[in-house]
Amino acid sequence: MKTTWTRIAEITKWTPRGWELPAAGLALGLIDTLALAAIGFEFTVAGRDATFGMALFLALSFAFLGLVMGEVLRVRRREAEAHAALQRQMEETARIQTRLAQSEKLASLGQLAGVLAHEVRNPLAIIRSQVQNLAEEPPEDWPQAVTATCREVIEEIDRLSSVTSSLVRFARPLRVKGSEVKVESLLGRVEVLARPLLQPRSLRLRLEAGQSASQSLYGDFDLLCQVLLGLIANAAQASPEGAEIHLRSELRGDAFIFMVDDPGPGIPPDQLERIFEPFFTTRRQGNGLGLAVARQIVHSHGGRIQAGQSPAGGARITFSIPLGAARKGAA
Image (cartoon, rainbow, N blue to C red):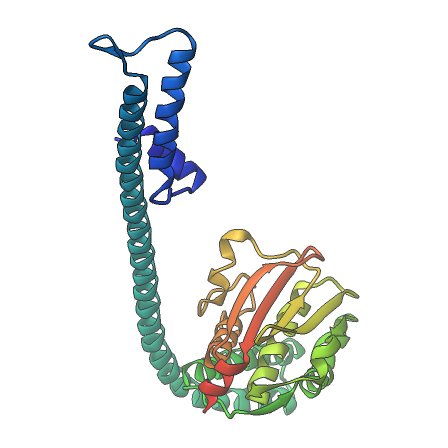
C-alpha cells in the first residue's frame, strides 16, 4: 500500500537526500514545542520546567521518523527504477525476437521467391517472343481484335517480368560497394533519371539540398540512387497530374536525411508500418516489393526508413544514412 510520501515522490519525481527528512523532523519537533508553549501549554516533570526536554524529545523523534521515511522512499525509488529497467529490457527482448522471426520469415520467403522467379522468367520470355511475332506478322485472315489482344498479352507479360525481376532483386543478397558519394552528384543523377517517370503526367521534381549538397557520405551510389528513384516513382503514381514532388536532403548530426514528399492522398495510419512488408500493396498494378527492397538497401547501409504524413497533405518517406554506420556496413 502506498503512503502519502510515496505518492508525493512518484508525482514530483523527488527522492529526498539522507539529511533532508531528519532535518525537517528536527525542525518540526522544535516548532511544535514552541507553538504549544506559546499558546499556554506547560511541560513540567516533578514540578520542574521540562519544555527544553520535551522539545528535544519531539525533535529527535521526528528526526528519526524522517530518517526512516527517507530510507523507505529511496528504497521504493530504487525498486521502481529497477522495475522500469526490467520492463524496458523485456520489451526490447520482445522486439528483437519479433524482428528475428520476421527476418527468418523473409529469408525463407526470399529464397522461395528467387526459385520461383528463376523458373518463371525463361517461359515468360519464350511466350512473349511467340506472341510478339504473331502481333508483328499476323496471318492474312488474322482479325484486328486478336492483334490488339496480343499487345495486351505482351503488356501483361512485361508486367510479370517486372515482378519476377523484383523478386530476384529482393531474394539476392545485397552487396554494398562502399565509396565516397557526393550528395550533389547523387541528386543530379536522380533528377536526370526521374524525368521519364514524371514527364508523362507533367509532374515536377523540386530538389532542396542546401549545404548538404557539398557534403559526401559513404555508401553505394547505385543502390542509393535506386532507393530515391523508387520513392519518386511511388510518389509520382500517388500524385495528381501537374503536381510537384519534393525531394529534400540535409545533414542532421552524424547522418544524412533524405525526404520525399508528394501531394497525393497519403497513407492511412494503420498502414504506415505495413507498407514496407514484402508483397503488401494498395495499388492494383503494384507488386509490393518496391518499398521492401528500399528498406533492405537502407538497412544494408545501417540506416532507417519510415513513412509518415507530408505537410503537403500526402505521404512522406524519410530515410537516414548514418555516416559511421554506412562505412562499417560497407567495409
